[in-house]
Length: 252
Image 1: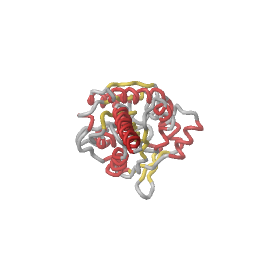
Image 2: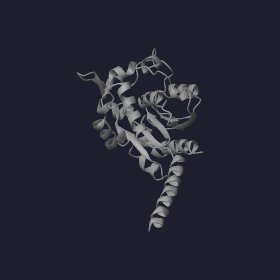
Image 3: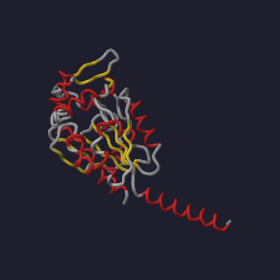
Image 4: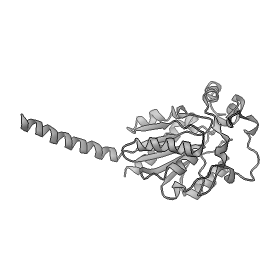
């Protein structure tokens, strides 16, 4: 009996090592949402990633400051065993640019996202640009948090979604602290990690020309999608394919 038990223990150890080795080849995808959104904005992408056998975590950012959102993302990374492909949408791009310095992060994917350099903020990156199309639809509450009106969501944020889906996006949006616009990145992780950048060609929130400039600065592999700002909802397969490509590269 003792030999049998000993054999099971050894076999269990070998199996565990094999599982851990396989897991090491298969990174977990950590998804970071942007402003005026929450983790459910990835709802159409997640099943496509899971179908490829990938582990997925969707961070719920408080959207209260860069530091708070980076902390939330780092906690998600800490909870993962093995390597991470870190994905950021919109404001989430700023978050992953900072949080992506974690050694577990093997690569970054930006989806219609800001990608500031060292010492940059959204404010400094867009200084001198004309007011964005969505500006008339911004509302600030008594706590200094910004939201988009339903009309603004339908016209400029998610204009290629069916009206009922865009309405749901507007209703479930996460208010975003206005101070985030001035928050500066300390060290941009994209200097040290491979990057895939999904550029949204019909974006009315972050101009496609600015997205392309950032992609060039990052030396990113670019995937262009004829999409609004919410490509993960209107073109989920294209976004999932970009993330899957990053995961395959990380597993090699």
